[in-house]
Amino acid sequence: MPAFGPPTWSIIVLYGINTSLPLFMIVLTGAAAAAIGRYLLAIAFRLLGGHVPQRTRHNLAAARAVFERNRRGGILALALFALSPVPSAQLFEAAGLTGVRLLGFTLAFFAGRLVSYTVYGLSAQTIRHSSLGEVLAAGLTSPLGIAVQLAMIAALIALTRIDWQKYLNGHASRQD
Image (cartoon, rainbow, N blue to C red; front, side, top):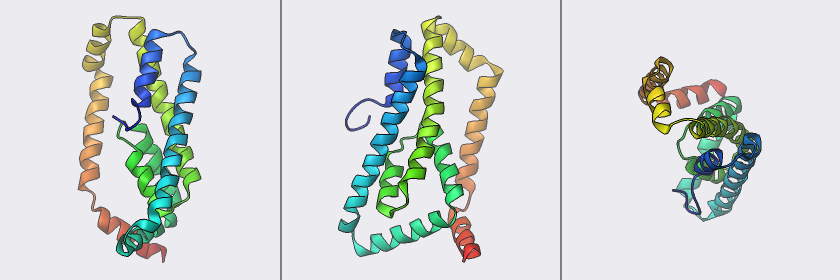
């Protein structure tokens, strides 16, 4: 659980199940709050950057150089990351420490959260209008649901098999 409260998606689900508030407004408010909070977190970590050891600062500068050489790829990666349920706080902490430009980072995160929070909200509204057991059974047994889960497992395995050090070093040397 986040340090200062429940995850935003859980609040969206709670309101989606228990209220008739417009889903668009709930999602927009939640995504904006999440993006602003992550942006402020990155700013706070940027301020802490001067207090880390010199060796760490050199490593952070190298990471920033690799990211900034391929900014479009980094923004795309962040957008994909934002769509997943993986916690994003550490990514924004690292972004703050490395000193990368935060506006594009935050906008990609916001866009990703708009999509994921809409999915959560629509799911909550579906549950509100039907039996929870029926919804869960349909999700677990539908061919599309099974295919999506298998694709996500395959993507996770593929990501762990990539030699990231070789890719980043090779990519950095091609850009020089």
